[in-house]
Amino acid sequence: MTKFKQGWPLNLINVPASNPVLHGNKVYLCPPCLENFETWLDVRTRSKEFLIPFEPAWPSDALSFNFYKRRLNHQNQEVQAKHGAFFFIFDKQNDSLVGGINLNNMILGAAQHASLGYWLGETYQGKGYMTEAIYLIQNYAFNVLNLHRLNAACLSDNHQSIAVLKRCGFTEEGYAPKYLQINGQWQDHRLFGLVNSVR
Ligand SMILES: CC(C)(COP(=O)(O)OP(=O)(O)OC[C@H]1O[C@@H](n2cnc3c(N)ncnc32)[C@H](O)[C@@H]1OP(=O)(O)O)[C@@H](O)C(=O)NCCC(=O)NCCS
Image 1 (tube, rainbow, N blue to C red):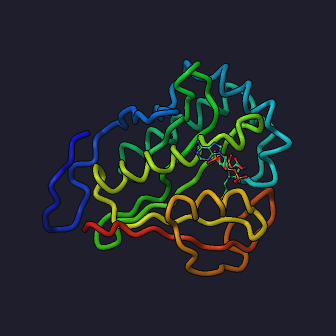
Image 2 (cartoon, rainbow, N blue to C red):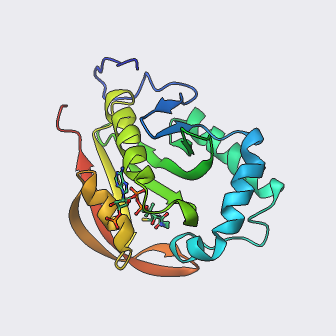
């Protein structure tokens, strides 16, 4: 993986115009594309009731091709603007799409941080997929994008998400009342962070 040099002004001048495939032992992370629609639809349909309590309210067309295309267009714009990086997570053994992981709200300049977001299909829980996906995206964020910090926010009782963040080295930094609108309600969140100790 190419490592870019950093100069002043602090800026991600070398952020690539598209995101690469990131390879791990158990999973690989691949930028979403139109061809993934059917498998994405399958896992999101099977996991709908499981995921809804943890995500922004699903619109009425959340499982349609139109919604998928809108999302892809938005993500591509964010990548071009250097505001985000978006990946699906695939099982290396059988190429199943098992979930997604994103860097959102990427801010450059003196901040150089991004917010981590992720989900797994219901049947793919408890197998270590997300732990490895977070390590891969963290390596990409710190060693390729030159980010300085990753932020993550969890609902207070989202013990699985808190466990995976702690396993990946994130520390708890605070508590934000009514921080994000999840499942249609402004909800309190526990805040976590990981600082790039190398730069
Ligand atoms: C949050 C979420 C991604 C965590 O998923 P997860 O399956 O617990 O995380 P991992 O894939 O890293 O798997 C870790 C679990 O698998 C086990 N495991 C099995 N093999 C493993 C391996 N090779 N490596 C690491 N863990 C392994 C771990 O012991 C752990 O189980 P435990 O927490 O009971 O000890 C998932 O619960 C989810 O999608 N939730 C809904 C959406 C959501 O909450 N998103 C985040 C909003 S903040």
